[in-house]
Image 1 (cartoon, one colour):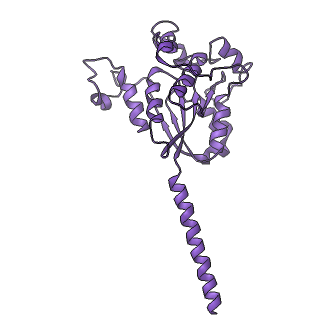
Image 2 (cartoon, rainbow, N blue to C red; image 1 turned 135 degrees about the vertical axis):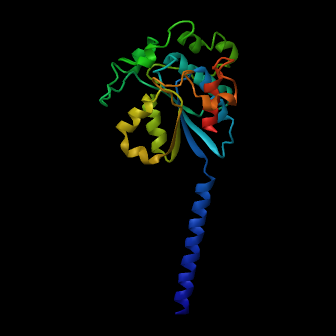
Image 3 (cartoon, rainbow, N blue to C red; image 1 turned 90 degrees about the horizontal axis):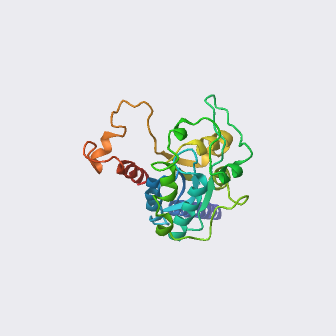
Length: 256
């Protein structure tokens, strides 16, 4: 009887030690992060803010690029590569969104010839995208964003990683690889197409997504200024200055 009690006591002690060690390991693991971005200029601040965090707490695993907004994919992916090189993070996976889209009835359009021919043409989404079509192509629009207003090559050091046809991973490929690896937090600060397609095609992986943080906007908003007044005084007055810094402010606060 005494030996049985000693044996049971030993089992309980070992179980407690095992559970404690497991909890300690889980608690010490950093938050894995996937950032989905349209690579507009303000998104750089959000990415840099993330990369400056303590990696023992926040580990950026991947950056995926949404091509339905301001930046052209061929330029955007190289800018992301250069930023990661500058920050010493060439280990971070980068994926580029394809040219497929989602219809209003939920139908996912297949990539027309794959995204490679589209990216080579420096074009992006095939189909009707009102947001994309509303953005100017030249000065004051995508040209300024693609070139960082003409200072990109002078501003960012050039790393070895660059866009390469047939070798560049897709956004869906990167999302599947990183999310299937374990619990992860997703930040979406561009158009939501990449992650929407991922969730529709991979519902079994939703369980690995711990949190989703979205940088959203509004359509036909009743707000006459076009941006949220509740956050305005955080940086500027909406009636006296340009609203330019507002989105930068919101994205950094969102990640914080």
